[in-house]
Image 1: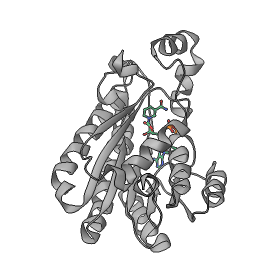
Image 2: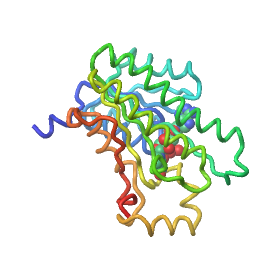
Image 3: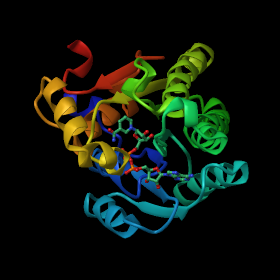
Amino acid sequence: MAFDLFSLKGKNALVTGSQVGLGAGIAVGFAQAGANVVVHGIDNNGIDDVCAAVQAAGARAARIIADVSSAQACEDLVEFTVRELGSIDILVNNAGIIRRAPAAEFSAKDWADVLEVNLTAVFRLCQLAGRRMLNQGSGKIINIASLLAFQGGVTVPSYAAAKGGVAQLTKALANEWASKGINVNAIAPGYMATNNTAALRADPVRSRQILERIPAGRWGTPQDLAGTAVFLASAASDYVHGHVLVVDGAWMAR
Ligand code: NAD
């Protein structure tokens, strides 16, 4: 019974940016729960390994390279998922970038690039997948936000603005689609050991300060997100809508 509640058997998922990092952890977690997965990246780096892990779990893997800052590429991604797997039942908007500089010197390009990938592409993909889900009367959308949906961060103004926007977009879409069989939720990961935080972890002072503030006493890993994503993609969360779920080793509780 409990196992069935969390099963993704027969479901088809698109996980953006799943070539490495948190997206790879989610893609493999989905496969272990029974879902077929489109493994996506901006280049080939890591894609073979993630596809192999999805297949080793007994699920189908389809791969695609696309830059989500292009509107056409977002359309291609959703079309590809439906063509290769037969439907899009689960969308995880995980692809994201970060640029660091003091606000007074922050470039227009670093503002625009981050808003495009971390917020505009998220809306585009929600809209494109959402139309399909409205037609089929069911679907699960999970947007990857950040603790910087709640906090301002340090020298990452475009990232904090975009992630705050992701949290609000998640709620806005949930209000429209909750009655149509579509769950829209977000995960706000804490400080996770991936490329996204490589600069922080390489800075001995920031790295120590961050670690000292995490009650769990360690950085998170991609595997730490897999169970949360499976929950939000499964029937176990059918009455959970518009929620931003922190997975942060108790950072926000401190
Ligand atoms: P990562 O840098 O390892 O992965 C980012 C992924 O996004 C990569 O797979 C990359 O291919 C993809 N991507 C980036 N730009 C793209 C583009 N233009 N088109 C297509 N794909 C693109 O970092 P990560 O930590 O695994 O990040 C995954 C998500 O988690 C991001 O949205 C990030 O903001 C968020 N997040 C990370 C942390 C953390 O501590 N690592 C914390 C909170 C939120």
